Structures are given as C-alpha cells and as structure tokens.
Length: 67
Image 1 (cartoon, rainbow, N blue to C red):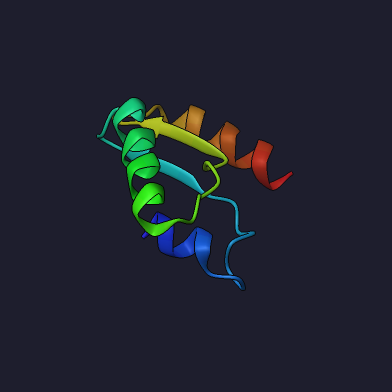
Image 2: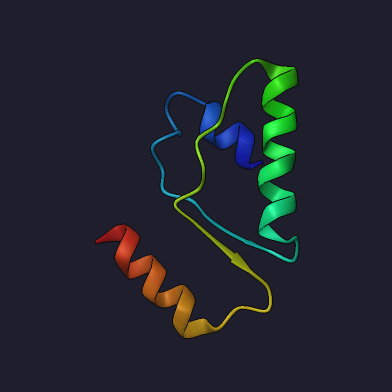
C-alpha cells in the first residue's frame, strides 16, 4: 500500500507515517528490492515507528510533519 501511495502522482505528496511491527531495517530493505524489480525508486516515509508505539511519540510526529 505504501508503494502504491508514493508512486501515484496525485497522492505521492501526502505525508506518510509507517506504523509497523516489522523492523525498520526489514521494511527499507524490502522497498529497495521492490524498487529494483519495478525500476522505480520510492521515497522514504516521513517517519517510521515500530510497534508497540508510544501514543505521545505518534502525536508529536504528526504535529511535526503536519506543521
């Protein structure tokens, strides 16, 4: 879903915070591999939070990203 969002012209400028149980290293590596096959790099998300998240951390990130 992240890749689809960031490669769709009308949607790609929407800020994304990834909240996942997958370790960041694994997520970013999977994106690199997919980019090799798709021949289209995808920008990194504005933020990546690994579960379990702290609600305060998520709120602060949203405030920072959305201004």
